[in-house]
Image (cartoon, rainbow, N blue to C red; front, top):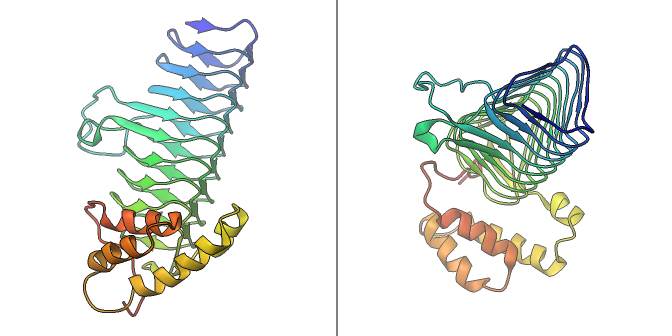
Length: 268
């Protein structure tokens, strides 16, 4: 066990032998830290939170009461292999959130980026990869092996099917069931989520170039109409909008290999 002298630990907290507690950490009443856990500088565990397994929690992350972080995956194939959960810096992990480590079949690692907000009751399944500045609203759920890129917002009670990819800057509406990949900057909604348009508000808030946004709007219309397959149209748009970074993000995403198809609109 290694506990930095500046860490503040409530006397009722349980820190198991082997845990590493960094400088300026705060651990509240009845919190539990497992033997293979590393808490980096400034991490705060509120009362009754539990961090277990081979888990690394990045600097200045705060974990709220009754969160369950790093317990074994909810996967019947899991055989007790040693797999890892990595959580980045400055995340806010609210009450009753669950985050699972990876599985041997999925690469052995679940990774969460920096500056995320995981609201009450969120579930992050095994082998997920989550980018930076991601928001998952209350009771949103990610199945195993999901890829969630930077600046994605997932609405309350939404679910993302295992192996789905959600591109950067996308918005998933509340209660949506996402069963296919979501393009970067797309907005999807509905009981079986369909593509409703672009997340223009998110782009503007992050200061995207106006000309690039206008180009993306034009390319978006061409991508989801016309002859040929979506991949063929994406290849054409990639060439025609070679100088537009937003279009390149979308077309590159569509052209990547994936086990899921791409979410489209109701009439597509």
